[in-house]
Structures are given as structure tokens and as C-alpha cells.
Image (cartoon, rainbow over all chains, first blue to last red; front, side, top):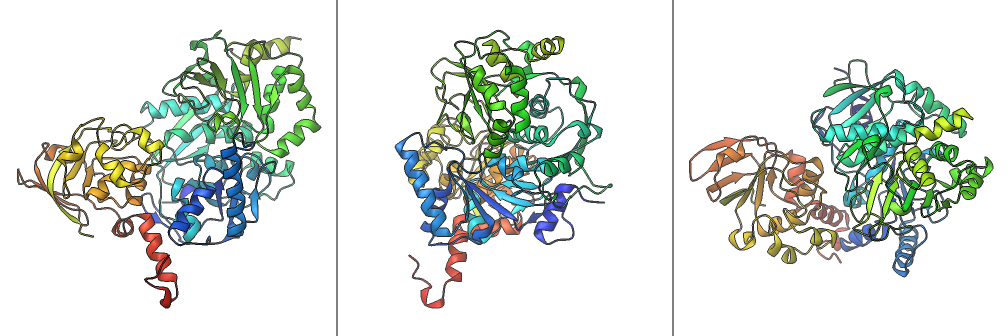
Length: 428
Length: 180
């Protein structure tokens, strides 16, 4: 039996000809990424064990993205500690404040993360990198083992194959698909999903650009899948061509790869979704509280901060204004995206509409260190999660939705279906 | 470490979460890692008085989707420090990682183990071999033990124990035994 793409990645990184689900391997990462929230802690933990260096400073990347404006003196002190750690360990690739941007996004835009690469990363949303054919696994606090020894034990996961057919309707986005799939996995509809890797195949990929793939990888992460993977194809090549980047090494599944299960999804049947506050329930947007006033709308961060996402929102905002009583915060995923927004006039569209442009990074989703919610407020946003208290007050309600739904709701001031906004535009 | 545990079985059901199941969430989010501060609160949300009733050599019997939710290791740290082991029918992968990293003696994937025990039965488990015996009923079964590479981590006291040992062995001979 052949190998899935996930198994091929792990076999290559482990120096083995083949691996099978359940095997314990010790893969050698091409890159290790640690985010600002754990840099000083990792240094402290390793220092406590007497370990005063990392395995290879040139393969370690530090990113400041969770707290880029140091909203408190404590945050500023932690950032200072991070800089000292980078200097102490000799980490030259430290994307600090005002540099790269959101650490699950800009590495793909700058070619730091390329097809064929294997990564071990502190933060769970490193799964984004599957969008360009890289495999990244989350370690959490076990990153200290990777930093010291250059590897860690990994169990080879089972792989599930998802075949995508059809085409998403206008203003229905990959995030809607991801919300629906995640909820259906959790309901048990597709069998076991804990620590499974997903490989996405099918004719619909022709119409699914990398930006949308990032959103899908991102949205499926929180339920406990370990990876979502797209083998490089023409859309991936376009992503790299547009940015003047080399294409990297394509790793794809063998034709006779062994999948734990296979399912087919018709994209044309997907409609806009809403994840209700608390994150336990996902329902079609039409069944949600359409018309409920929103105090806070927020677009961007790791799952929806690409240029393409911002174009979707700008198309809705152009010539319109954010509703009185609603604040609309926009967090581009990277400095490169901010630069392109300004070059192509999107910055002015957002500003003219009354949106607030935040620096590239995680934005309010990182614990509400900026743009938080007050008591009793309602938000609709593209955050990664919406458990109570995620972005400030514990009694605030956070709805998750697609960039189109968030932008439409910001304009209307109430939770809104984005499709009429598109129809209005088409009619003019 | 001694992989054979002999004591009493503490039987729990399916889906007992780490947060507010094994240990109160406030201790997890507070990143408390001192076992002595954690032990009095073990299972207090689902079985008050557990810490006083349990002793070294005892074994937790869990059902399916045991130790679920965010993989906060505080409950495992406390069990390991008390010398208590764990057997369950299934647990999430990230919880398995946290168990190994904490140096906890445990078995997972032991379908039917819940049916072998009543709460309080005598139990003997060889975690290195996967042999489980109910000393009260006399029933004995074998389950697959954890992979030997994971047992090595547990044997070293968890992932920090591995790092401590690894780093110590890397130092020049004159430095051995004199680690800061």
C-alpha cells in the first residue's frame, strides 16, 4: 500500500522509507516556530534544567504576533525578555513588533514556509501551513524538547481523505465550509477525528485559492485534527508566482495510499454558517439571530487575514459605512498584506467606511489584549475560537462567521447574511 | 521506576475532562505545577475526598474519551507525584502526550477495562507489560503497553526528566553530578 502525503512528510523528515499510522517517529524539523507568549517561558524552563542553548539557532524562528502593541507594562517587560532570549540563543530570524506579522500567515507569504517542509511549532494554528503543502505539527509547551534536542516523538496519524466537488456560491467562503465540517466531525457524522490528518482532494480545488485553503486549515484545527493538507497544485503555484517565490517541493499522496476514511463534500450545498457564542454549536447563518445588534465586528487574524479576505470585505464596504454603534476592527495577517492594501487602495476603502485598521498580528483574538469586548457586548468575527471570555468580558457573546458575513454585519450593525450585499452590488 | 502497581481501583466513567474533572480549571490556567498544591484538589469536582482516600499504588480506571479537553497536565502531575497509575479505554492524543510528558504510568486503548472492576476492588497492574489483574475477582487481562520509546520517557520522570538526563550526559565528565 502506498503512503498518504502526511505519511510521506513524516517518513522524509524521519529519514525512513515508509511509516504507518501508529508508528512513533522522531522527525527532524526544517523549521521551528515559537510565538511571543512562550519565548521567555521556554528559556526559563530550559535554563532551569541547565540547558543554555538551542539545537540549531538557524532553524528556530521567533515571532511577535500575539501582543504586538504591548498594551500593558507587563507585556512590554515580557517583550523585552523575549529580545534578550533571542540575543542569548543567537536567534537571527526574530520577527519582532512591526516586522513579519501573524506567524501562521506571513511565513507562507515570504517563502519562509514552503511546500515540502516539515515544521514543529509551539502554537496549534501552525496547521495553516498545510495550505501550501507543508506539514506543521503543534507541540505546545513540549517545544522545549524540540528547542533542546531538535526533535520530539510524534505518532504517525491516520489520514482522512476529503474529496471536494462543486463550487462555493458567491459570498460563501471556505470558512463556512470549515465551520460546517468541524461541527459535523464533532457530531460523530464522519467517525473518529481526534489527531487525524485531513488530505483535501477533488476537482473543486481548481477554484479554491491558497487564501481559502488557509481558512479551511485554520477552522478545522480547534476540534483536535492535527493537520489539514493540500498537495501543491496550480493554485499553489499561482500563490508563489504572484509573490516571486520558488515553488518548493511538492509532496502528494501515492495513488494507492491507505486512508482511514474517505468522504465527499459538495461545495455548492454549503451555505453561510455561524458558530454560536461558546463554540459548542454551529448552525446555518439563516437560522442564527439575524438582526441581532453587534457592538464589535472583527476581521483578520490567523484564519482570515490574507489579502484575498480583505478584498472580500472591501468589496462590501466600498461606498458604504460601518453602522453607528458598531466598531469594526481589521487585523491584516502581515505587513506585506498591509503594503499591498495601500498600493491597491483598500486601506482607503476601510478607512473611508470607518473601519479601524490594527497592526498585523493576532488582533483581539489573542486574549483581548487589544480591541476587547465589554460586559454584555456582542461580537461577530473571524477569531479562531469564541469561548466565553476569549476577548475580554466573560459575559460578552462572540459569534464566529466568514469575512463576508463579518463585513456585512459591520455595515448593517446587526448580524447579517452577506449574500444580499453582493446581489445589491451586482444589480447596480 | 517500578512499573508494577498494587492497590485499589478508583473507577470513573467516560469523558471525565482534565479541566474541572481531574483538577479545577483555575489551577490549570494559573499554571500551578507544584504537585503538593495540586494533590488536595485531585478530582474534587467529580469525587470529593479523593486525595484523602487514594494512596500510592492505586490505579484510576477510566472509560472512553477519558482525560478530555485542553491537555492541561496538572491532574497527571498530581497523580504521578502520588504514585497513582491510570488505565482507560481511550483518551485524546494530546492528553496522551501530556501523560507521557508528566511521567505518568498509564495504559490507554484498554477496551472493556471498565467492566473488569468495581470501584474499590483490589488491583495489580504491570504497566510495562500491559497486564491487569483484579485482585478481588481474580480476573486478569492483557492490554498493549505504551510504546517502549514512550515508556523510556515515563521512566525518566517525564519529558523534563529526559532533558535533564540528556543534558547531564552531554557535559564533560568533570562536570557530572555538579549540575547547577
